Image (spheres, rainbow, N blue to C red):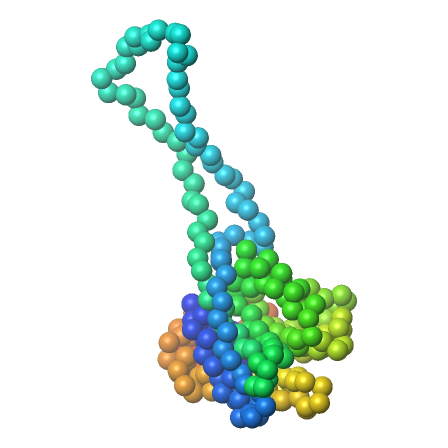
Length: 259
């Protein structure tokens, strides 16, 4: 995985990856199943931390002054130029609609939803979008739908689990509806290839393998993200550990992308 993709190219990569995953598994699903791209929108407030509201809020109320009906109006002398009134200004946190593209696997005969593949984005891990995602996740976990979650972002909070998982840069989570509340977890180091993970179907059918590394490689082959990224700059936050930073620098120098 390329940590530089966590910058301004993430949204574009996110949608390309969803298409690459569908293209890879579709031949393995036919004729009984189909993989459909499902887009939804969430409100994203990237400037604000997890579930936090702004630390300072300013309210400027309108004031309406009236006289009682039985009171005569009083003449008030006003200056020709009213004094300038100043009020503090603060930046209002901006919301934006962030598209979320996932994959729904349905059976062709009845169009039942069998499995959902979610590719987490920053909007799922920060701000109001994180709350929306956890609510949606909780709803899915109460159904007989498999849930495969792919977290290729080092930033933000992780999926809440009971118990500790190995520290890693990336995670893949699989919740089979028959095995809940247990979840399979793949912890992936930055320097390791992304894994091949199963996509469950109906109990009568075997899992379909999803090669995540092949899907990411297909995205680079299609778009050529390496041509759009400035590898002379540090990767987006969070900062890499010393060993990971040295490994990234070594690979970039070997590829001629850094002097």
